[in-house]
Amino acid sequence: MGKALIIVVVVVLSVYSLFDVIAQPKTRVRLLPKVVWVVVVLIPVLGPIAWLALGRPRFSRPSGSGRRPRVVGPDDDPDFLWKIDRRKRPRKGPDSDPGEQPTG
Image 1: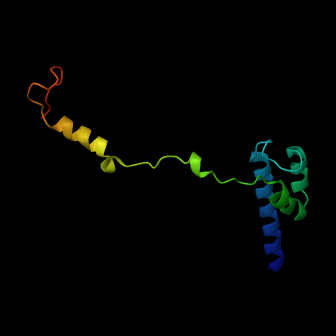
Image 2 (image 1 turned 45 degrees about the vertical axis):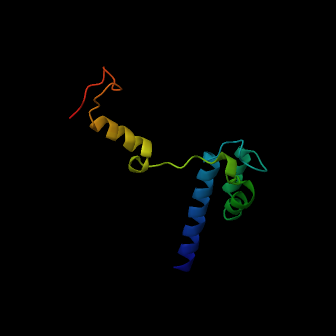
Image 3 (image 1 turned 135 degrees about the vertical axis):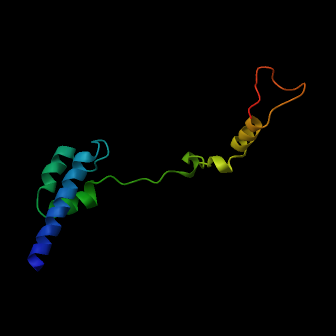
C-alpha cells in the first residue's frame, strides 16, 4: 500500500508539473527555455521538484497603486437608487422635461 501511494504521488506531481510547464507563456518561465523544462519534468521526482523550485514563475503581488476600484452593488449605489426614484416619480412643473413621459 505504501509503495502504491508513493507511485501515485510521483505520477500526480509529474503530470501536474508537465501541464504547468506547457500552460506557462515562454516569457514567464525562469532559468531554462520552456522546451528544456518539458524534458526535465519528465525525469521522475527530480524534474517536477526542479520545476516547482526553479522554473515556475513567481507570482508578483499587484502594487497598491494599481488596485481596481471596489465594486458596489446596485442597492448600495446612491446614484443608481436616485435614478430609479426619479423614474418612479412623475415630474410636474416648469423644470420637467417635455419629452419625458411620466410612468406609473
